[in-house]
Amino acid sequence: ANRFATSAGFRPADLPFGFADFESATMPPPILETPTLPPPDDLAAEEGTVAIEVLSERFADTPEKTQRFTAIDDRLDMALEVFRDPAAERAYFRLSIRPQPAKPLPVLPKDILLVQDCSASMSEARLHFCRKALADIIEQLSPHDRFNIMAFSDNVALCFEQWGAADTPHKETALNFVNNLRSRGETDLYASLQRALELPRDKERPLLALIITDGKPTVGLTTSTTIIGNFTRLNDGNISVLGFGTHPRANTYLLDILTYCNRGETRLNRSARWNIPDEITEFTLGAAKPVMHDIRFVFDSASGSEVYPKLTMNLFAGRSLDLYGSCGNNIKELLVQLRGRASGHDYDAIIQLDLENATHPGTEELRTRWAWQRMYHLIGLYARDPKPLYREVMQGINETYGIPIPYLSDLDR
Image (cartoon, rainbow, N blue to C red; front, side, top):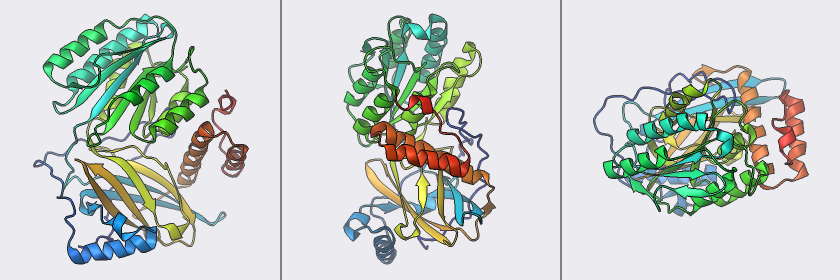
């Protein structure tokens, strides 16, 4: 088999636009035999040599670094949409990647931290339904998972000192902890984020944190930009952060940018509070079955492509992972390497993108979506290092692509 052959692909999902409004596209899991990963370093000698030479040339990798990865090219399905903008002489594309249904990757045991805002601003009425959502998530955990629950207001409390196995005794302890949560005190969100960073990490397990909050810090570190910047620098992509805002007036700037910069996404409850359990449960189902974590993408260095997000979510069974890119209109082919970890080993896939003969022609919306991704990337950079240059580039995107600078009034406070 040729490592650099492109899959025919599937039909990309039509996703509603936005970030806090993002709805993930999910697919029912296939009923197949027990999935397994290829053994580490199980590359044929001749093909491995070719792969190393191409990666070294196209991605500027050393052969020693390339040899660490085991190929899983045949385990992934790809879809590519391309839109060419003749006026700007640019091509815009969306690459959607999902586990191959016919040759699925095994679901990995995960560690999940459930972080519940219990401050007075949440109100007991909303916290009641959050408790119901937490109980539902606990009941649905896989026996191979580990979990913990963190409650925060003006202090932080953990259910377990470190991690609890998802067995009956630990679930019963956790349910009792959840049932005793009450709405009181101020909101110190950053203290909970700092405590999350102190939990031990097993590098063979994806680590996810679900933060349920109204997103309005009132004590401790209260500046949203500083919270985002400090946590993102310290986290360095280790914890994948999901954010759930309990009502439409939640601090979407804090949740959106915090999750975007830390391998996650945000969902807002825009309906009545009694819908919170179903909304949270549905939201977390998309991240229930990780198959690869610590994902990194490396694009052909000669193409001059700009692709976002720079730091993606993990790869999950039953959903696609989307990248938005832009390159010169004269670029006919791109090579991209996906790198990730599973079961304690490093895996990769080499994806050849034929921009001239994309299976699915895109529309001008791809241009807009790419611009939004770049805008969010710049806001994340500004949160970590508020350089005037980032603001200037944001303004340039606003003028070129006709999209507003989101959260403009929040950037400096």
